Length: 245
Image (tube, rainbow, N blue to C red):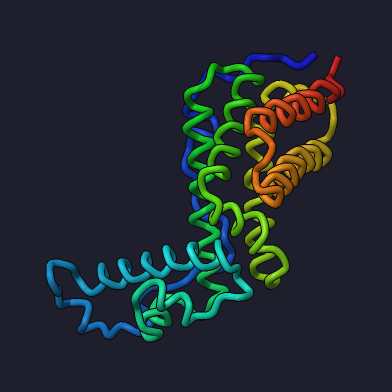
């Protein structure tokens, strides 16, 4: 049977830290802002602050538009209209709609990550309790944010090689959380690390697929039932890991 005690050193727990972005493509602010402009403040905000504010409005609009009509149906005109900004300001922060999609994806993934962090840090320190807390945080965040769910589960798939790489990086990021939460079930296993990595990816892949089907089915199944079933599935896998004697 799996060990039920997790490490007690909170500061070493990967889910207790805020990870930086794993994205391979970023967007540069102030690409077209003259240096002299940056020295002048307007209505209490510096030019750089106003660029950041406009960028945030565009990301807000992107999440709204991509999360409702979808990335492929959206245009830059749609985004700018929703943000109340001209195309000039769009290109001030983003090269194209794909760059905006990456920024929206990053925001949504980090919000789902934060929901998991909060749930896990408030749970008892056993594998069973913390895995359940992580599942509760993840599925609750998806339930509460349908636009973010659509972006992270559907809209980023098959867009381009660059977006695929960003998705793969985030997938590996979350799979590493599975390993961390699994505690002794992984750390005492006699399986080689590459094989354990595949198992962790398989566990998170199953969780993602369950979430995607739930989303496509308009969340008809009760969330608690979904969490209970997924919790059993993950623990069953961990219980079957061969351990060193």
